[in-house]
Image (cartoon, rainbow, N blue to C red; front, side):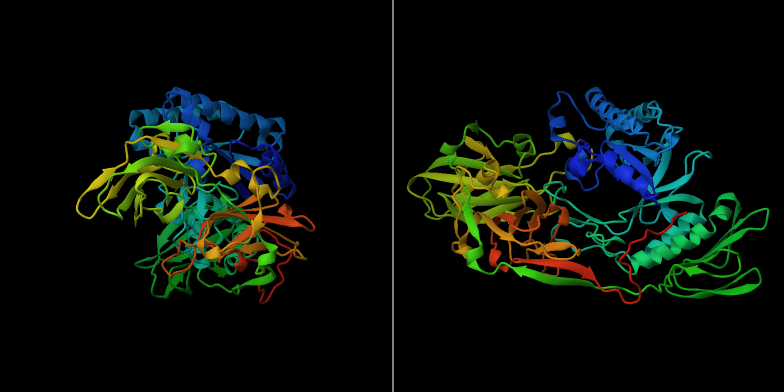
Length: 638
């Protein structure tokens, strides 16, 4: 089994203890592909780059640009030095058998022209020059320079991979997507066990020698680490779900597949491969050793019909879209479409409800007006460059004199952020949001203005930074235009007026999420829940007994972020429904490592629409119909 690990700029302590993690992998008898990047994408905010990189003069990411190459080389060298100092490369007796430089660069290479090709050459030479003693790879990079190995990412690399670009390079599959990342407003992507097994087997039959699952184990985007619109739960449909529980039949079916492949791995590595037709859309692959070892793969590419084929004077029935493996070229021991692992079901067990008003306290966040801001500009500032990714929130405030003839104009705000909430004279007017596939949206509401001076405050919200594409450093977020319109065509354009800015919420500045009482924080009894906006809620709870994963059911909340004992369990966005009218995610993982024996403090900030009285603390388990998988064992690999 080989773990593929992406590195990040903070890889030295706590949950980011990269060295400690790799040592634990070695202790479990497994290997590592260390994917240094430093650009990783991975649905990680800003593709894994720290935002301070944006402010380096003259920088252009991921091209033949001297400032970027300087910091990229520094980071790569630091990670390699961390590994070599601990003897973690295979050349030193350690578990790291591969390293990766860059990530899926071919997706954007054309945008940089000649400079893109020069950058690929430089990155390869720089990485190889670090003398790790193990091969370097570039995924999705057909022109990876020797000796760097080009590899495949995707769901069907047995079909789509054009192969190594040199005869002395192996066929490697860096990311076999067991599902796909999910964004707010979207349904989960369900990839079947049969489909995964088919394409893994096809890749092996066509001389593939390495398959890394992405993801094999789901996870959680704690804090603000998720990229734009990406939900907090990550690859929950993996063979091991977000909580580490088996997702059957996916886990069991792949375990059986890899057990079979491992049983004949010597022949697959040493035998001579041959390919032949078995029918119009049927084919076979045979690996034959001189000493007699023989492995056959019989493939049916017909999605609708099963067929009977003849192979070595025997008849074999092949299920639709399937591959049969014959480890001795005679007997079928595995068919990719024949799933005999029973499905399991997730069980949610409520442990504590927070339905009593008495268990909650609340803190009303501050709505700033123009006079409360020190940063001013005569035009809209770009949001990411203003917040420096220190907060999801940026206040745009303006003071103006009402000289419109209509009594109730329409406020129209165009935004390239993700969410906007409008307040006029401290009164909430309404909110709007975009989605993952549309880069801007419009907020429009009728507003009632005072005669004379009025204060307008727009809270612009990001739900993660962009994580992919060329010229990431040039991306724009935040408000684009704003005007007040009367029905007769009369309007007041406020876009290029004098605006005041405030980064973040007051509660963030006061670190309300730590649950401590400090100056400026006045926790009160729960108010009128239906009319509240920008409210912090606080309560306590006891740790559920046992070892089952712990989750918070936040299906009664609106949008915001949650903390347990001062540690963020991620963003939630219940109000953003999928096409079936349900939240994309309602259960939020609380790792037991975050919990104390008793007196755990839960703090949430809700932008609008949240009802904390509906929150519950639950545990998660799965049914196990035939076998007891309580002691988890990983499948073998070839």
